[in-house]
Length: 104
Image (cartoon, rainbow, N blue to C red):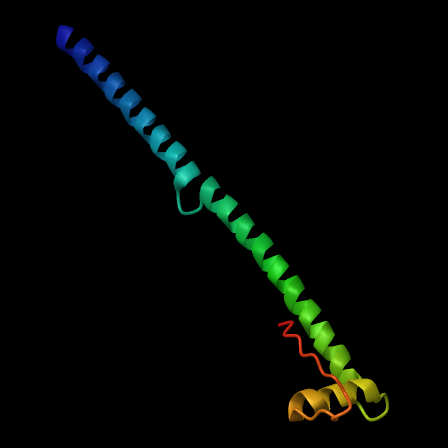
């Protein structure tokens, strides 16, 4: 009878230790695991960065689209055409002063 009580206490202790170990493992995994809270925060930062990058790309696309639209035959912008020709060919009239700014 004395042995069975000791076995019961040992069994209860081992079950409690096992449950507490599992709880500790899952708690740590919830915070630091591959799909844990820290990974979630990193993913949110990456999403915000990619949103900003997308906005910049869309802005650049819109700028280039407007530039291309100005060169269509039906909506030809002569100033833009003159600017592109001078920039591409490097041609400047001797009576003109040309200042080149690298804005890229």
